[in-house]
Amino acid sequence: MSDVFKALADPTRREVLQRLKAGPMSAGRLAEAFPVSKPTMSAHFAVLRQAGLVTTQKDGTSVIYHLNVSVLEEALLGFAGVFGLGSGAASPQEEKS
Amino acid sequence: MSDVFKALADPTRREVLQRLKAGPMSAGRLAEAFPVSKPTMSAHFAVLRQAGLVTTQKDGTSVIYHLNVSVLEEALLGFAGVFGLGSGAASPQEEKS
DNA sequence: TAGATAATTAGCCAATTATCTAAATAAAGT
DNA sequence: ACTTTATTTAGATAATTGGCTAATTATCTA
Image 1: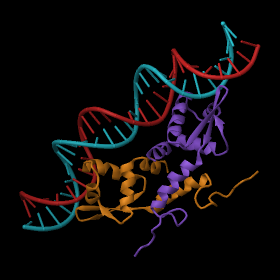
Image 2 (image 1 turned 90 degrees about the horizontal axis):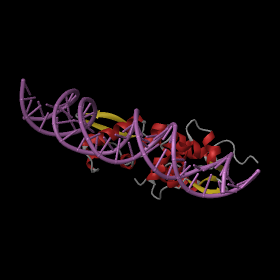
Image 3 (image 1 turned 135 degrees about the vertical axis):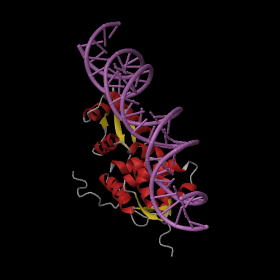
Image 4 (image 1 turned 60 degrees about the vertical axis):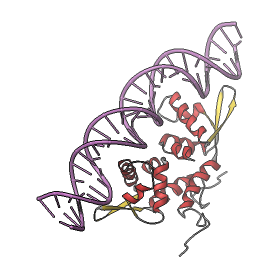
């Protein structure tokens, strides 16, 4: 889970996830949207993949990236739940006094 | 907001927040719970303060740290909302096709 | 098979981060 | 005015990160 938060710490990577929300996209098209070199983007993708936030699928010479929402959900809402945030009934115990 | 995610990227800092959930605590008592030096913890506190995740209050020679839940909430649920996670009706537009 | 296209890996560098010890600051108590 | 206690700042260092260019790998097409 620490990998997920580490991945989310970078603004470029957070924006990659947001763009993937619209649907799967190739590394190249995704990279075009950012003002950094492709190898740099490739490194960001690797971090996201390592964290499980994205999955890949090959299509010819392209690599298609897919958002893995469930990992994002588990990390964000899971952690929020520890603090009683989110859906209200996040963690089993609430106001014990 | 990037500051918040940067702050959350470190496991020690996430645990500090979790401990503060139980209530305000002095830097010293908080630091005791972790296997690193006090100056190191002080640096972590500074990151959390910078991000707005904690606030401080002096009490004699001690500095009391308080959790600022609203900043945590805004960051976690705000970002989760972008992906349609959380309360379900997070962002105004949903399934447009 | 040669050439073009797409993506990653290799190798490098600068900046940041996490950590430490030692020193400085701040507030109380004696 | 000292001394103790609590915390932060200074200064150093090793590891990590984010960025680049150049080279490599993989796949397709002519």
